[in-house]
Structures are given as C-alpha cells and as structure tokens.
Length: 144
Ligand SMILES: CC(C)(COP(=O)(O)OP(=O)(O)OC[C@H]1O[C@@H](n2cnc3c(N)ncnc32)[C@H](O)[C@@H]1OP(=O)(O)O)[C@@H](O)C(=O)NCCC(=O)NCCS
Image (cartoon, rainbow, N blue to C red):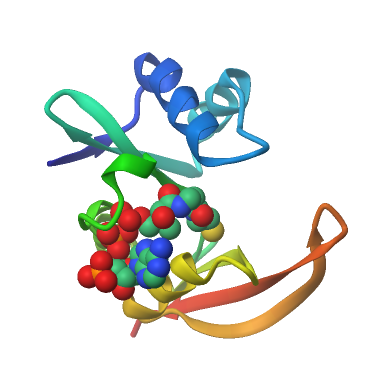
C-alpha cells in the first residue's frame, strides 16, 4: 500500500469513494477548494493503482484538525485507516504541532475505537452537531 499526497487528478476517484462511504458526500468542487488551500493536507492510500482510502487535515497555528477519513467498505479492517493516521501523526510531529483534534459521531463506535488506538482521548461533546440531531464527540491526540 502506498500513502501519498492527493492531487487534483485523484478527485474523481475520491468522490466515488466518498459516495460509497457517506450519506452526504463531499463534491468535486469541495475537494478542489480544500486542495487549493495552503493550510490543508490531503493524502490517499493506494493499493494496486486504486485509491482505497483518504484522509485530510487543516492546520491552524500549532493545531491540527482532521477534516475526514474514509476507507472503501470492501477494504476495511486491513489497516488502511491506521496507515493514513500514522502518516498524519508523523506529519504533525514534523510540523511540531501541539495536538491533532477531530469530531466524530457518537454512534460511530468503529471510528472511535480506531482513534483511541492512536492515542486520541475524548475531550468534549458538541450537542446535536450533525444535522441538528446527533452529538459529536471531540477527540484529541496531544503531542509532547
Ligand atoms: C472508520 C474507518 C475509516 C476505519 O478504516 P479501516 O481501514 O477499516 O481501519 P483499520 O483497519 O486501520 O482499523 C484499525 C483498528 O481500528 C479499530 N476499528 C476500525 N474499524 C472498526 C469497526 N468497524 N469496529 C470496531 N473497531 C474498529 C480496530 O481496533 C482496528 O483494529 P483491528 O482490525 O485489528 O481490530 C472506516 O470504517 C470508514 O471509512 N468508515 C466510514 C467513514 C467514517 O466513519 N469515517 C470517520 C469519520 S469521523
């Protein structure tokens, strides 16, 4: 598996992945907008030339914020999200960031387990954050 930076040429394939993973998938223009910013980093996981996962982050001062992470359903539980998270954690350490933070649906127990495995702890709750219905758990991984 190869982890590399996402380019504009990847976006059509990434949008298909998004659509397979989320009920409100990001559009091509949203990804183009993200890639155009200087404060964001997006990486893809590629297996046999196919994009099977991606993750994004934006940086604000010395803080990192995960925008999204997703893996194609048929490629899950093979360590792909873990490889992406490892790459981003190393990037945060290289950039000397203080912490990496994210929001996750309270019901997304799989993702919460993944984040805990990577040293994220629950630091807060945003009530009705999703669709004014579901709470978001705020999770943060601190760096020394
Ligand atoms: C969450 C997601 C990114 C995980 O991707 P993945 O490539 O399957 O994750 P990994 O294989 O690296 O998992 C590593 C560990 O995380 C935990 N984990 C991951 N998915 C899990 C699940 N569905 N249930 C329980 N634990 C899970 C396990 O501890 C797993 O280790 P194990 O397989 O040895 O038990 C993937 O399920 C996904 O794309 N979900 C839909 C999109 C989403 O919810 N994104 C998160 C938005 S906040």
